[in-house]
Length: 497
Ligand code: CS2
Image 1 (tube, rainbow, N blue to C red):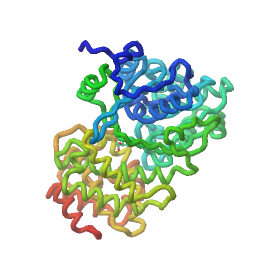
Image 2 (cartoon, helix red, strand yellow):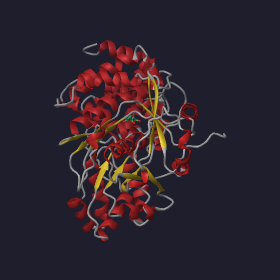
Image 3 (cartoon, protein in one colour):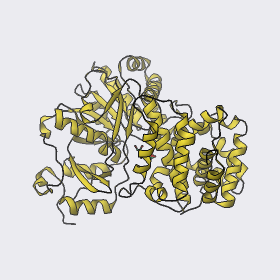
Image 4 (cartoon, rainbow, N blue to C red):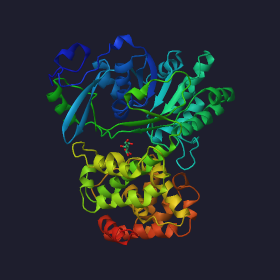
């Protein structure tokens, strides 16, 4: 590989077709610490801040923190943190250079540097994308999981924390000790009521370490909720090669995404708020209706496509969406079982929202792997599908489509599903494997074993009349005739089918 790497000194070779911001990087200070420097952050929040810097300036550059691996540092540092975003759809690919990222820290190598950066007076915003499991909480109750290995570690050694929450609490503690004003902490993960959810576990952990700190956090730190949305498949070697031939430079930190982006933020910042509305951000008083619509309609359908699509032998979202059984299933799931659980809200046209989602999922230029979405189901399904399921059961409404997806997930998680062999990537994978080996042939045993995991299903769902029997029947149905036959049958039998 002799190609020239993307770097400030090589920008003269960048194709003029690549959109470039005009601001001078050095003229803008770092005001943000972002925990979780994955592709999603680079394609979403860091792009919004890049646009903001370009339009209005300000000290809103980002110190990105990788909470686990050092590979992102190897991708970014040789490029002095420059990277490109490739936006793909049927019309082609448009590239854009992003320069809002100023520094990279790798938390396991140097937690003290992360803590010190959070504590700096110039840091006004701490944002996070650490995925659902990064919050070390029980998905059913939303409380901090104090038996989680990383939390056990952080309670013992709060100065060298391992979890993102531990880093955040240590940073806030250092801030308080240095009498620096309480900042804004912005959760950008797909959790319901994500600001309040984060606040709760931060206060849970802080309270166990130092009650005075917990009190300071509760009183002063702002935890606005936010809804973030952009489809970001994992970048592949082929993406990097294609971008290199189209942009003229090799970018190992490239991110690939769709043209669409949405960010709705609760208007509750401690101190000055960045003028993100200039970049299309919606500031609202209450994010919840937007958040729940997104979690159920987008993420709920996405997870459904993943488990049904993999069982039907597909690898990519757009392939599953082109299937003549799966597409109508997803349409019906959204329209008949998910959308009716949402509260009508001004500025949110649910029919148009569903229509747009179908088009976004069908974007064949994107190549979004179903396996990426299928990961961590135990952390995702409670808010995506079990919450609407619960709501429907309580109202005495049918939920046969959601139930079919839950059954398909159980078989996937037990390693007993159809489709290509796969590893089960989930924090509870060992528990799933144990249930599967004990109960493999029995639908009733699988249903009982999975429903016994209260951190996923809560205490109520397993007790809900008829639920366990319906789930058993659905698992048995799939084991007998396969997912496709069950999808067809459920479509035929559904009340509006
Ligand atoms: C996906 C999300 O991987 C997943 O579970 O459902 O990452 C989804 O692509 C984003 O939330 C879209 O905004």
